[in-house]
Length: 533
Image 1 (tube, rainbow, N blue to C red):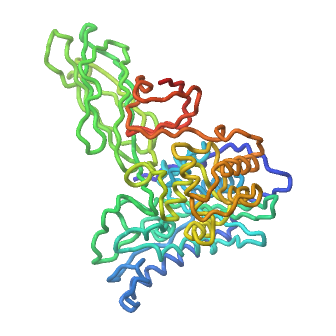
Image 2: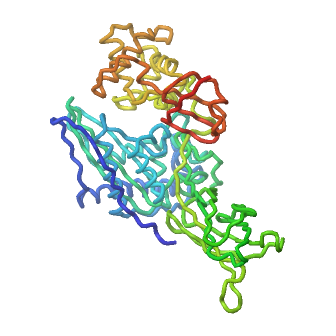
Image 3: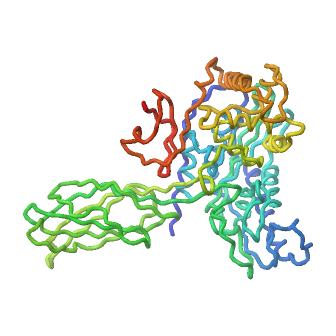
């Protein structure tokens, strides 16, 4: 199979950084590239070594990231791919300019929102690239080495269970499994550093992997004699990711009807090994007509894929039988627009029953989301669930994630569990239009507005909480908003068809509001409707 051509995605940036902010972003030196490869391959070789001597290790749960039996494992060393590294460097350059710098994974549905991120995530999905991110900050001199980033990713192995092929509940382990994924062959990484006005120095690493790991239903590597992995529904770290091929058939063009201007057509196409789907049936079209199709076929997987189409014609009532013009197939290696032409020729090579072209567009997509139902906003209990739910409503954080997780799990000594529950209640059915830091909200609530430090949601003063959100928002984005409702979008969760009868299917009395609809068919964000009950 031909390797997909890698192209660097150029993301235009409009970033207003204060003059005292220092940004450092440049391709890695040869020495740094060698260090990053060595750090990755040392971890990969360590797995091979540990599996080979598995029976000598203590048989306790502390070694759960290894197989139970041990044995021979093949995990080849990675090689450096400059094109992949260019993609990683460009994304690192983008993330470091955010205020504050962010590490947004493509497998987080709440992070897959900003235009630059959507472009990047679509790009790596098209090229079947995996991704690991690492973001840290320090008021001193941070460790910018590749070894530091790889150490953080490897540390997740204690939360991975090889036998069950899943992460520990409430934990993440997808960075580790990508790190040791045996079918990944090539690596490219980028680093960016930024010192902000408050004296913090941020270091972000982005590593992309080709081909991608963390494939649903597969373990990162196989050990001879190990049972197949259980079906975890593609879940690593609480999220599902699927690579989807979508083929959207757009139109048919009639080059030659050859029946005196009276032709009816039937077009049947199939994607891969799927059964055929009738796209047009008994549609009248004559020479140079272009009837619209606008139907899509989808399949899980990656390119290349084979598309096969069959064209049939009959003579508009003169001859009721269908004439088979033929069947043609095309193997698609890259996303984009394509066409299949089908013509029935006589023995002399002339068209005798018809000549048509079928136009279609092939796209690869990264489908992301939570397992099961859409994310609930109703007071999750585990720290990881709270983080996910808060991100869904537009609450993020500027402190290290590990610290926040500890605080969210300690209602006796910190206000964060109570504030998290209160924020979820306050914003139920809504979402902040731009994210606000929970740690800054806490500071505004207690230190500026004088609210008592809550230990339960019943202790939270919701009027003060709204005021704290307003202050945190204005401070972050340099605005002076005074109306809390201006900060939020309405979030409607419903099982509705998307049709021109939408306003008749729900009871809403809002004019000019910014609405987000989640339905069983699609999710539309940021659309503006004028609806009346």
